Length: 199
Image (cartoon, rainbow, N blue to C red; front, side, top):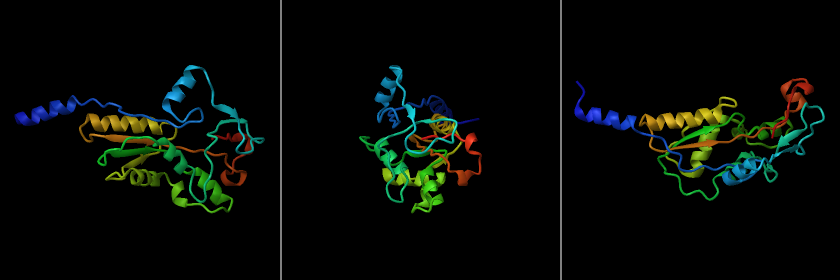
């Protein structure tokens, strides 16, 4: 028969309800969550004719582009993206569990490598993202990454909620970052007409 204390602990764990305490976004529409929400409510769009890469051989000539996001040396543009994402944040508890979510990670550096430019290849690997973000935020552990195509961020949030609900974590930080670039003809081996550019 379980002890009274075990029963109390089980009841406490079952009563844990995850709560989102802070959220921020950086998108082609706005650098803030409030700006994104207001833009969506107003019916605005951040999809315009693509100007960062040629699109004449593609089925689409439009993209969502963060104009100020530009390459810097051998580092991926992800660094600039998360600098802006974490701008004006209060300190994150050092014992927070980090879950990152990315499908393509620093794919802009893959483009650099394929064209003979200097690039940090670690930025290309989705598995590198947790170490980079946890190091920047001073977290005790590096956490883990989820890469599940378009469902990556949804799964990451669900994982975080599940871990808190189960009493396995008190604080979870979910950080979702992705860059996508137009693939070059030689890199993917696909007919140009079958590819779509994203930004």
